[in-house]
Length: 88
Image 1 (cartoon, rainbow, N blue to C red):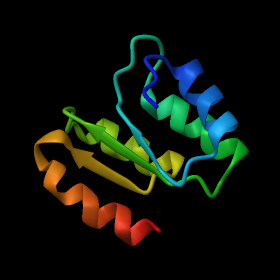
Image 2 (image 1 turned 90 degrees about the horizontal axis):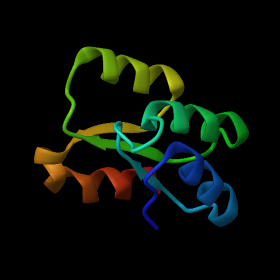
Image 3 (image 1 turned 180 degrees about the horizontal axis):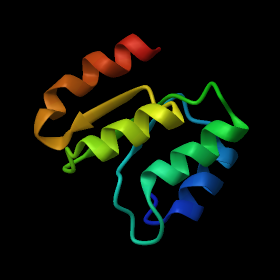
Image 4 (image 1 turned 90 degrees about the vertical axis):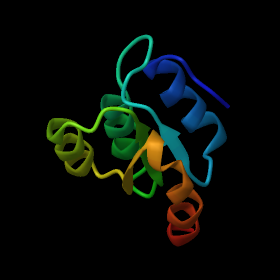
């Protein structure tokens, strides 16, 4: 499933409980860091990977602080299968 806003991402996670989530930082409404934080607050075992074009240290630090499992640049998409395998 693909969600355009923070609220939908949280709602769909709670409805589906997927094995893992790919979360972008920039959403149409809200942001992926905040959505990840809210998901992890209700399910600390959630396996969330930030997949983004934004490589600023602020975003990496924020993602680490909320507890996402990995931070992957979209240009490094080839790394994603290995990351997901290691998470499961």
